[in-house]
Image (cartoon, rainbow, N blue to C red; front, side, top):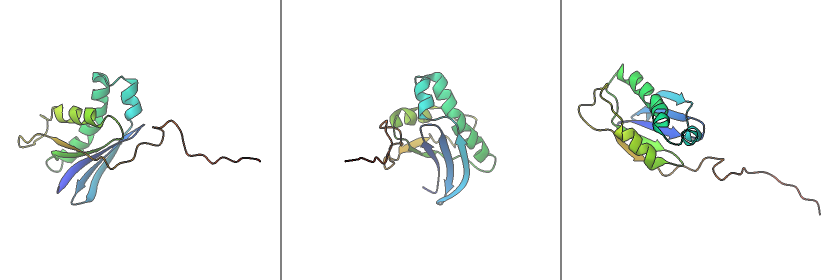
Length: 127
């Protein structure tokens, strides 16, 4: 992949990075994460708010060159839902040479720290 958009979804935010030849050329942190998707019950409102961050960085990229049509998604939950959301979105405002957006799921990412509803804590006991 010579250039792609890396989308890292966290509990509280989404980090977007435009990568060309393994160099990050543009970044954007969108304050909408998995907890926000859940609080909006993964509705059309949640979809729209999530895609706002994606479209923001794509508009920035399009000022200088064609947008990437290959995206890499890293998310500890809802990866399939987010993948479908991104692939089914309309990119008519961007020049893509009629190539559809393709999202690859990166499954090598660990779950977010609060997913298991506990944190690592040091306990002390008296005997």
